[in-house]
Length: 382
Image (cartoon, rainbow, N blue to C red; front, side, top):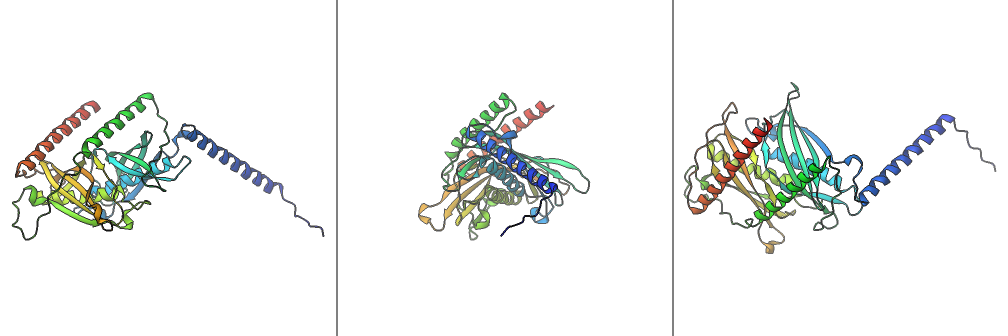
């Protein structure tokens, strides 16, 4: 039996030929990218080294006067950083991995974000070492009714890529291409500085935090550390976790900001907002099923700001024998605002005991250091 095949038009043949050439071109490009990575090169034009996410701010993102919680912004920053870091680390061959947050550098909240504004979060990889990467993030707030835009936040985050097959296995990070040798050197200095500070901070991570006040105890005097100290207890569920079943860094930071906000509000009894966050260090992972205890306490008060130390401890419900451990630590700075969002004087902090005095002196030193740095940055910009 003879089979007859219908004749194809020249137009169809041309389409098929074009499609085949495009497939070959894409395959060749993909092979070149993989070859560059294997040879220690850089993927063409640092593909995947920048990412942006945007979201409109809703009423449940803000406090009762319409200011978006700092924790919401921190959570968005971490999400953008995790996405760009994970994408970049998975451009190489080998185990698939997920970028895990280990540190957030000092973060300034430059302008408040309000309900109805759109937050545009842009994350860019600015430095890579063998096993870690730095992500610089900017947050722009846009009023979509007027078109006005403002810089709301800047932050620098450090991630390490953890294998999906073995969370304790740290993968190597593909290098990025720097615009100049100076840019690479500046990044290396930042890497060495944060590495040293993380080691110094680790020495005090096991400090015991006093228990929260018992409702049956006599009330603490107003404006003391004990009066405003607050604790939040949270059971880590699936929605809090990454693909590794460990808590997202952004979820933890949001809880920390909430507790710090409660401490500040109790001390001032006014509207308060997050002004800045000193370096947040993630000392140990928190797994699904753990109970986290987030404690905030005042350490120092200036005329118009409050420094609040926030410590996160974790305990496993199913592995209770491992005991409680310190997972995260940071210092948050809040300011008090009037109804027109103007800074208000902050009530002085009443110090009780040598330990509180020591923490207050350390807090004052950090306050003066940060103040001097802001003035230096302002002069350099002028």
